[in-house]
Length: 376
Image (cartoon, rainbow, N blue to C red; front, side, top):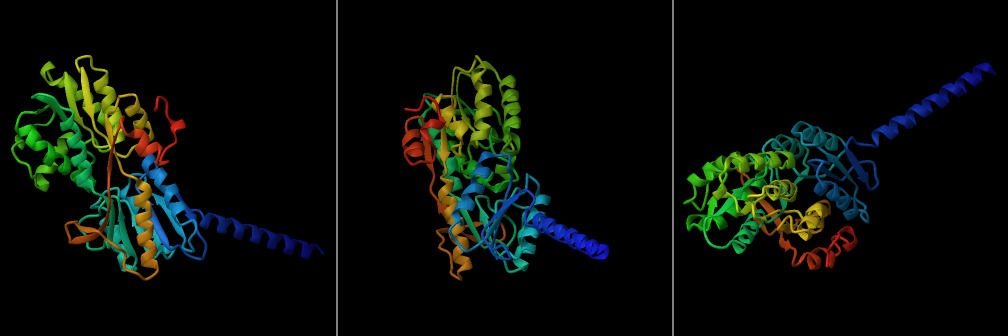
């Protein structure tokens, strides 16, 4: 009898350990999954959970396949290329057939996607292009040049007279999109710098190139190296403080500020808004983050470039499903990533300011009016 009891107890312990192991294996670190089946069909790697944009995308990706027979798993790289590569390897071990990836560093991600291609996995770069490799099959993106051009045109449309101080800021030099945003902005701004409408306040490299409309990669890199924010609000704040401290009164007054995205725009706006010698400022942004929409309503940020990520997610997931179904996805253009032309599908962007914030973001149900104060 005692022997049977011991055997039963041992069996129960083994079953318990098996259940615990299964539970551990079903939960990926920094990730989430959906769908059914023994493997994962679509692996998604996003750059960080520390920015609202990517957390929102996580839920949208889940929703996009909620009614599908295909399964997905989402992992976050938390700003680390090494972690990103680990995430891709973990997904490959789960048998993914399609990889959707937003790289932390466009060049460093090449090794990760090359491993995916060796496993015959279709690679879709999402929102940020992966460079210097032929292992990228497709690129789903907003028109990044158009984003920068829209920001620049807004500054031009709101400038009066001549010698308007212009403060330039850019995203991370590790992000190919930062180059495209800045390139798009520069090509629109440069004629107005050359004719004296704007006077560059914070970049000697940009001043030296003020007569050059089309910059090559090296020239862009020199400017961005001086004015990069690394997409970091704290770095943006420190840089803006340094710039305002180092300039004279002639570079204050009414100023124009090219801020690359909403997170940096709010930090920079707070600095300029607290300087009594800055009488007014026009500042750009992008991503239509909730906090920046409130800033726009409160007239602390001038505009944002709205990129409806609902459409971008649908485009990416639609492309993945086409691949899984054995079809050729629809594309609308291509991008040179340094190793060749990558087929791309582009999504349009929309300029949002106080005048149209309600029609573009509330009436379209991107946000609810109750999430803001002072909206009309």
